[in-house]
Length: 201
Image (tube, rainbow, N blue to C red):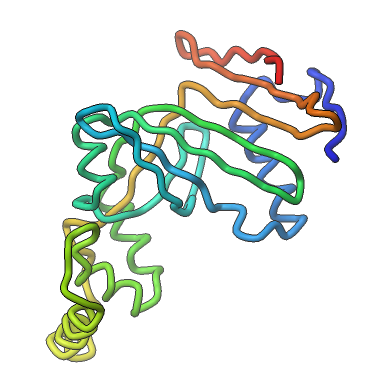
């Protein structure tokens, strides 16, 4: 079980707090600490949830990559607000974030795209993510065709694929404790200033 966390042990800046917890998760070798549940809503307000991978964060936001024409991409186009959740079972820790999502620059997306494996780059080019396809062979044929067309060259990032950044206005840190008396510290952004309070579990 997690230990009691005094209020003064939390940074006033939630990004510093996230960096601390994330670093501790990596040090403990939590399996895929960058895995996060990502929730969006459609035009009817119906929620949709899936797992994505965090690929970077700084003092402004949290970055991940996907197909812009995927279901989540289309939902973000209609409603750019979303939520993220990290859960690290080994530490009994959860971090929830809510905020506005924007595309990162094409240059940043290009740079990250070139760091991916050749297979991942090819798949990003040929997969019509979230669309109906006849079978797996359909994708395999598209991949083989692209490899033939490239003739040994590196594929360029397709316009339909790139990065997003979630700029949070609310971040909550949850630490599991015995008998359900958990710690919950919630940060909210008010007029460019982060305010944090303790919530009942």
